[in-house]
Amino acid sequence: MALMGQAALAMWWNIAPEVRADFEDWHAHEHFPERMGIPGFHRGTRWSAVEGEGMFVMYEMRAFDVLSSPAYVARLNAPTPWSTRLMPHHRDMVRSQCRVLASRGGGVARHALTVRLSPAPDGDEALRAFCQTTIDTLAMRPGLTGAHLLQHEMPAMQATTEQKIRGNADGWADWVLVVCGYDLDVLQAVSDNELSGATLMRHGAATSDVRGLYGLAVSATATDVI
Image 1 (cartoon, rainbow, N blue to C red):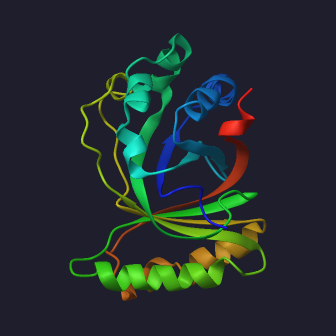
Image 2 (spheres, one colour):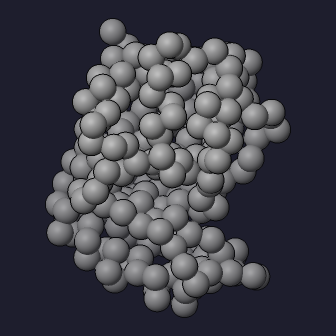
């Protein structure tokens, strides 16, 4: 098994407690069905941070060109009233349109570890080789179910209405490691050891990364749309 397609949209943001219930209702009952109705979108999954207000959302899709397809761009430029009301509450948005570089095992589990990183100068090949080898071993480890490596690439498109509502302040993650599993302690151990900042730096990563642990909230495929 692997992720469902050759591209993924990985996103992180914070939602304040006072709007969280409204957000979760909207995201599960309007936004996910809307996105899953776009040709090329195969699965969407939302996780909530183990600690804090953070969200991690990943859409798996057929190919990278889906991210700039007319159908998707049309939705981004015509948000619903509910979307328009909630978009300003998506704080600290990081939105990475990615190609899937490596993928082993499943893309959905009880928990997920994400590591946002960049290669050091001249470190691309070494880092990619290390990540691919590590992904192969992690996917079969007890407590884990899958591991994936994504690389951001900005599609050729103009700023959308949704981005403008958020203040055109979206950031992005250069490379993304996603490790899925059913045992949170095992994921924490992976973060502290095989995928620690020091280990990644020894294999070609830049000096800083951003990481988080998340619990599954909702997942849907195109055939699950109500």
